Amino acid sequence: MLLGLALGAAGYAILHPGGLEGRIPPIPLGPFEPLSLFVAAAAAGFGLVIFIAALMPKGPSGPSGGGGGKRKTNKSGQPIVIDFTSDHSAPSAGDHGAPHAALVSEPDAPSHAEAHAAPEPAPEPHQHAPAPPQAVGAFAEARQALRHETRAENWPQAAVLVRRLSSLAATDHERMLAAQDAGDFARSQGQTDTAAEAYEEALSYARGLGDKAALADALTNVGDMAYDEHRLDHAVGAYEEVLGLRRQLVAADAGDLEAKRGLSLALERLADAREDRGHRVRALDLYRESMVITTKLASADPARFSEDLAITRRRLGELEAKVAL
Image (cartoon, rainbow, N blue to C red):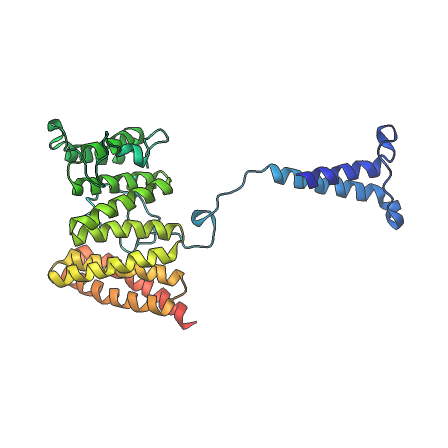
């Protein structure tokens, strides 16, 4: 802005030497003196352009602002659409190879610390007072109402329900679900810091539950947030832990098709993160393993898994072409 003003002043001084009652000294142009009118106009015009450019609003930065990272999409290549219908217990049909869906409270929503504040004396970590009698069954009803409000895109009422969930939760499993829903809401509203904090809280509860599926789901959310923020090392670490858990779940029940699909999703998430880190050969191996799984799934149930197979085949072909270059 200052440079623009300076150039504009220089143009004025050239055109009006000795102006302002002699307070503006003449600017000698030497051999360019015959072109003084052109030089003055160029300086003033360039200064005006710089001044206007300085006043223009800046575009967004970071992963969604053209920072060079790949925008995450669902397996069909469409942008991620937030969906709150999941119980956070199994991958949804539209989630193949894509980040988990996301929920952030309104600006006036209480902070993470306020939402979980306890009366004096403070309890030990994750020790909560029992839910009041009227809250029995209310948690599930509030989550169902939250799904209804988000489908209707009634965000103010959804934000109220998100805040209610944490107070209605009576067990660590419900507190984990409440934190995941809060993270989903925050993410859908673009409040990434709040979403990341909520997902980390959900992960802390999941680690204490001893439920591998719940832990894998919570880690997936944490990994997705790290991926979205281009913290690829953190994303890879989370996805690798998810992959180990998904392998264990498949080993425990080889006939569970959804467990196998969860393994396929974990392989492709990790592959995407490794590809973005430049590890294309390792990513290719992960996609090839996913291809084997999705081929078997599509053979077992074409109606449910044929689309997964088509998209995995396309992604595998794209990666093979990049590696061959």
